[in-house]
Length: 120
Image (tube, rainbow, N blue to C red; front, top):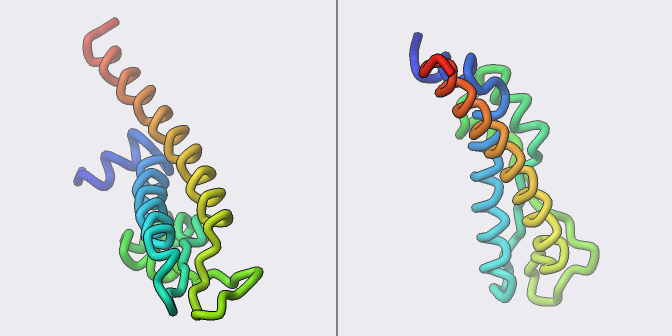
């Protein structure tokens, strides 16, 4: 069994979800960092679409690129920048909560396997 199969059997959907949430966090952070860059177009990952693609056998890279979308601003700026700081902060917070929950599940699973291996 290869590493990917082992991850799938031990962690199920959570291993893929953690990687996708990490990638999404990076993209949202990039948006926030470019909030004052003229012409910058904010992007986000459609998490559900990316996870579905990943579970369907797509690589992380293919799943992410296929699920990356440009944000449509509520109030476009005059300089062409589509970053709306409030929306980015909300997306970041929601993603951070999901990341933390997924990480907690994986941590619990690792502890469970460790106890089983020790015979506790």
